[in-house]
Image (cartoon, rainbow, N blue to C red; front, side):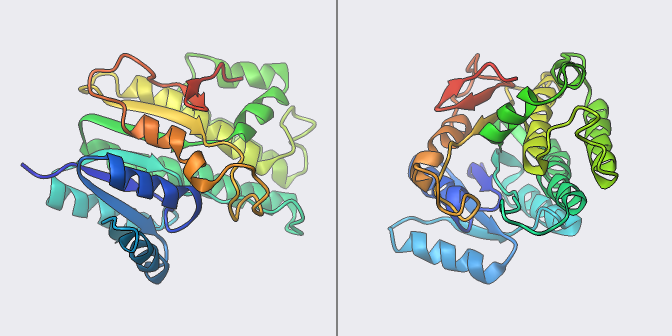
Length: 273
């Protein structure tokens, strides 16, 4: 019997690093720290080795389809599948970024939504029974859905919304942003916030799509305002505190009735939107 295995995307630093640290202590199986850059990833592994922990490393760039496929094939060949997936990798432009908003919209949606979805599309077929998936979203998704027009909010909250429908909404935002028409069309003026709306709603839809498979659970979560590169180290939470909710979702015991297809923060289900 192959050992159980967990993968955390974007985990050579910040919240992802802390998630790996916690899983090394609490998960009964192998834990993979992943990073785009192999040297940074190996350095992060050594740092955890110095703490007496034993994560493994695999290169992963979620923007690179072949990189995702190499990880998938490795997991299938070595472990017969995947038990835990934490989709933590993501990007955010700084508040003082001089990049034009159309560029911010296209780049942010591409990585945070499309690349995360591609990781799921590639790895979900190898999820084992009782697998757990945590998509790391943000409080920005809640703040941004609140700023959407009533019509747009209704589309995102429609329980009948399909993944194809969600994809069209994400495409619509980028297209409108390129013409600077997104605000007039009822969208919030935040590329990061919209990308995380996408991640949250994606999670709701994925749980419905996976209901026919044995006890696979997908949730989205907000780790909180954490002191990381992404927040310019302004958040009050440590990375280990930020890891608490994602780790809880990664370790939901077999057969648990809830949470399933929910959005959580502070380890509690939230009424999203």
